[in-house]
Image 1 (cartoon, one colour):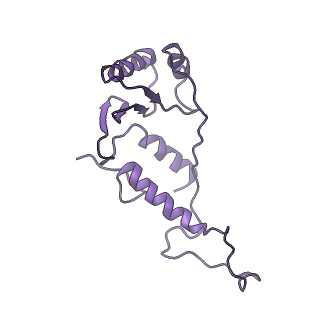
Image 2: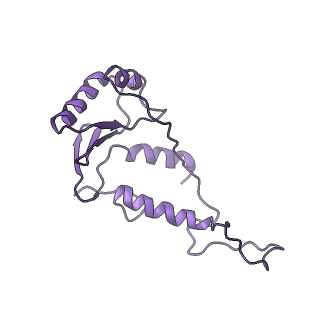
Length: 162
């Protein structure tokens, strides 16, 4: 899977309800939007919005749903989201938070192998330093994070709904 395919997969995953979520979280899906109610606050995420979507109406419905529960809400927005979403959120009283980045990486050189490839160097006799990190462990961490985020055992497949 190349970077473009991974980007498209990430966009497809946005706004989906995972097979499982933390205990106590109430998840409510409505159209392209997924609301998560944590009891003290909530979040809104969504899949890419179709052209012609009434964004102001969509924002108003989400605000009403959270107002019924007396919960403040955070709407997760990305730079490539639908044009007009930022204006609709600002008009509804939302304020911009910090800028988030999305990291999409291409396959590692040993992807698909059971063990990482070993690269010999003239420094191989030196003991590893404290600050040295195993870059191949990043893939394992990413796969564990994927399982938590999507409820999927396999980071290359979409979770199924029951």
